[in-house]
Image (cartoon, rainbow, N blue to C red; front, side, top):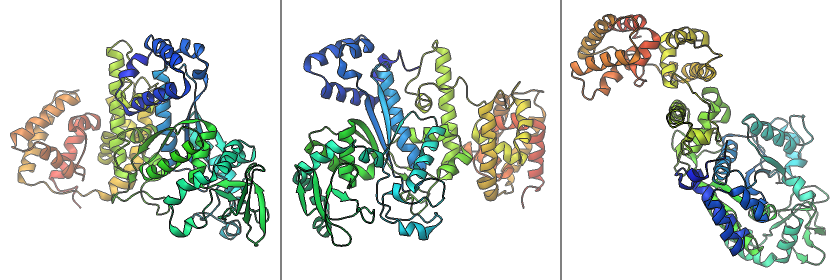
Length: 559
């Protein structure tokens, strides 16, 4: 699936391949000697990536992609993007290297963070208030289903990622700290404490600088994550001294889960300990990435390749905020659109700010379907050639399905509107006559889209429908269109119908011609936009379309 593509991948223009090439250059620079680099370049040029991996052991170490997850809340739209974008780069890297160099995506749960803020939508708030500031994996589960709130959310995020078929390794911050997975880096931070402080303190306000320490001790008495200054350090013993909540001066190891790092040092420690090669993050974290990069270098490591994506905006072009609840949720998108349409929306123009609201779903869905059709046309025309820059290749992780939907989402929406269809069975009554041998079983994607179209129509289109009467020129043109439709031969296809509609509009003097089509949809369907009218008529039926126009001309559609 991801082999035989390295020659194409070297010249591919899409952003995941650009990142994959940067990542390969990083691997060669950091892992190989000059002689090994020359050998690898020679073998890579020949497409012999497997031979290179066999000859150079350093290439057999997995390339690590990482994304983080805040375990104090449930998975959401951002969680999907955090996993989707690095997966796209990972697949591009696998194609670039003939899938010979091993790769791994780590989803790291920050479940040792202190539970500082209680989300408004949680039950048992009094109980949660008692557990405030404890690590999320020490907070009792308000739903009573798991041993902790952190475990509850971790289970949810894993089920979430599994439902989309992501290939990943899940890591818990709590387990990693307690098992000693970060011990070596924690001791190095203790040893280079002043260097880390020199990086961090200039980024903080005056009051915070006075008490800041990269180490957040976990009180052995209350179990809370403390924002306590480090009073003294013992590098030989691997301990720090701090003042506990009750005023007791306490000495504790920095290893074994007795402390938690502040988030920027934590990010740097994780990159260092796990040898992370690639991490994507939002534009709002650029400064934090720079600070964490400096800490990694102070610890003797090399920061990962960073990819910064723009943030999503709501319908008012305000930044999406979990606390505000603005924008679109994961569940809402999946009520109206396929997971593939969402993945496409994550793929396109990641460095441009995009609105994340209900009205983007139909357009994203149809653009995805258009790209999938183009991919399959290219595959058919060029003897199974693979168009790796096509978004469908990235959305489907290198294996797009062999066909998409014969009907666009926008056309389905208009069909639902015209037929006032409340069930998929009603829609299929039209679709089966238009598409030979089509059934929900033979056209599963179309069947899914039909359900999404009904949901979208009921929730957004129907409440906003506003019919208007035609003006004199529009009325005359529509009367002429009825005559043209009645004169069509039986079985006229969508293109023949579209040509007649086009000629009527031209003959009526509509300029630009789009005004004619807008008039048709405003008068007949109560909305200003729609797909090709010929395709709509072919599916809805010429006779039904004539009847619809005649009802509009009689004033029956205007409330």
